[in-house]
Length: 116
Image (cartoon, rainbow, N blue to C red):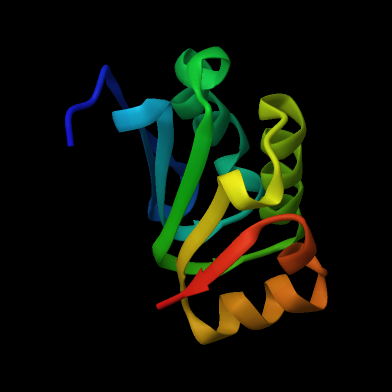
């Protein structure tokens, strides 16, 4: 996959976020560690350069150890900013615990959730 550009940001607590704009203008973001309030600015800084050019978004949560309400809010903010339909916004590689939490929050109605 060729990418236009890539951004890496370290997030407090040992978490990190990586974003790139790839084929078919897909914004790809990988989150590792705990996705919460400490991740807010770094997460935003990672995707911001690609926001206006993205036509699809994939958030890779394979290495995400957990997500709290602040992490959920960040996903909602990104969804609103990017303005994509459910089928164009994927949360993939979710652990059973993360999938369960996304289900409790009804995120499966807003995003396409793909478990590990």
